[in-house]
Image (cartoon, rainbow, N blue to C red):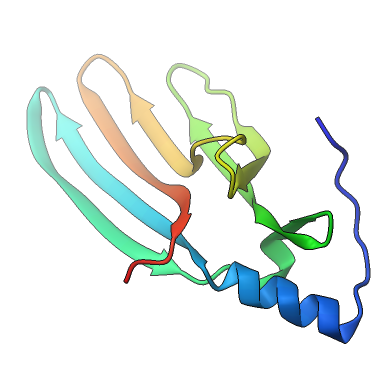
Amino acid sequence: MESISLKDYSDKAYSQILTERNDFVLRCERRYGDDYGGCQEGEESVTTYEEIIPERILVKDGHFAGALIMTDYYPYNGGGNRQYNEVMLLADGSGSSFARDGYSFSNDDHSKWDYTDYYLEKRPE
């Protein structure tokens, strides 16, 4: 894996990177719901699209390469294991396919979840 570092670019190079970035968006799929004793109270799903802010832009060889998503996912089933990750969603498809942020919980008679999956994709027409 290549290392990530901060780098300054000329105004012209930065403008080009932003232009290339404009071909992509983050598709955000939020899912949340409850299930008590096998009786599902409801599951909701909401899809939105977000612009890729400059702090998330990944650049390789002077060109837009993808987005870096910082996640905090907590699947707390019987103690849990909180997962903080830096997920690289790369435009060429070689990175992770998605990044998950939020939480989920499940035991014998109750489940609850509220998480968002982020996907890098070409801007819809």
